[in-house]
Length: 475
Image (cartoon, rainbow, N blue to C red; front, side, top):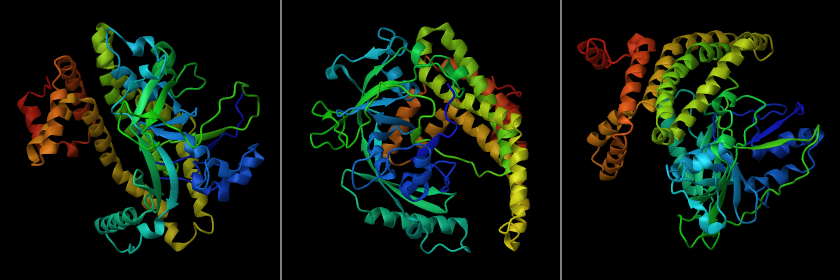
């Protein structure tokens, strides 16, 4: 079935840039009434913007959660039952799995609430209210300030906003910059940390097609898992406890079994992360042909080593299951991103779009005539820094040895006992006898790729010295 060509994305933003114009982009719920309701209704929406986002009565926003810090979930019952993707629940499903009871492999369904599985590290967050605070955030900020002074003034303003914000004692505040730090929005949030696993299909269903099919449409995977939110007896956030009861939502999504038909209005509501739709042409070219390839190259190495070890040993397969899945996700995305930009000649289209801007009344203003040339020039200077940042960030995330060095450095340099204890635990976790041989093998290949592809001016002198002392052999 062909999906209606107008699919609207209504988004809670945890990222950097949004468009507040109708017709495209991600839309912030606060502005739906003013900017988007008329268009949505013209496309078939039968509810009002206030039914999607309202601070005066329950609305769809009260059934949508930020799940685990990076996914979207939706409440579907009066007792806090929650649906999210299988890959979003993947890490906690894997954490509950053992060789004797491998629920990742076999699936899991709690027969009653007493069998639901507690996840100490998992939480969900509701957005209760959104306010624009740009004027207060930028109070006293002037164009002649250097970056350090500007940031310090903004941080001072944000602290004052948090201190005076109206909220309940169990609520928390997050303030996010939009449009590259030019506008600021405050999110009043409620975070629940007792979220229990209710059910999931076996991985053969939940991850059918694996990363080969991920980011590709159509997909045929049963990509879902089921959780339940628990609260204290007052329905407020509480640490996991036997005394907690199922959360009573202000709103939940009723489930229809009637199916869909051609041309049905579709509303997508959630936490999509961030958008870089305003990047100029050279930034797109650098992303596709320089920065993505070094990130993909690093992950090619790690995934190949881990995959070979996982296929050879079932214990290793379970041990690396979540890490492999997480790393492969962005690895596949970056490949598709580069392929799409090159196949569609995205750079050329963006160049024409930007050239057309210079012929407009705004583009002809004196302050804008050199805008694109200056921007292009700055991106050319930025490229080696971008490559160095990307390839070193990948090294730091893929190599346990790199993480161990970082943890030990922090441990030895800190006088705060809590920090010392935290990094001591991190260091010990990286010295697992089951993973050390695998990480040694990966490290040699990752380090070699890093050395060959990082711009030479960014290789630290002590690294170069060690490399020469070892006969240019990472082994």
